[in-house]
Length: 176
Image (tube, rainbow, N blue to C red):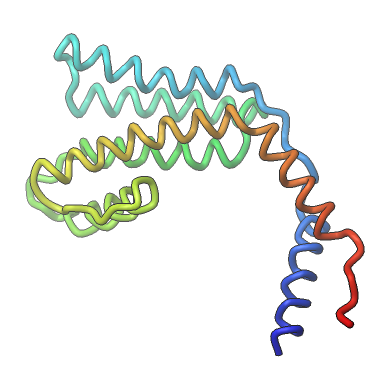
């Protein structure tokens, strides 16, 4: 039974590269990705220093960031992975400042924040109090860094993937 499972796993791994939509990475302009990330940091730093933040300013900034990201994606300056993660980051930022005085969205917000904190930080979300806000802010900062690391390592990732695919598609020894 183990041999059948192992063979199935090898077949899946080998065929994964065959069924991929494209082999290789899409051309990416790292400068554009870095600029998108820096824009978030600069904008929130300016809001903090000047004290001019607020829901309207954050919403306006997030909408601009999203428009810039869509334009970059449409011009193939960023790839689908970066775009998806950047978009999710913007959604979390937008949700974090969304007014909900009646508490209608609390369950939804807590579920999204919990998922985001767990996936980025590996921690359970605290749900209430200043710790919860701190966790979300910490996860946002970490995800900004993770996206920068993603851009830094696109070529390395592709080389490793290519080596893995070649290793998995090479000849195998028969069990004796």
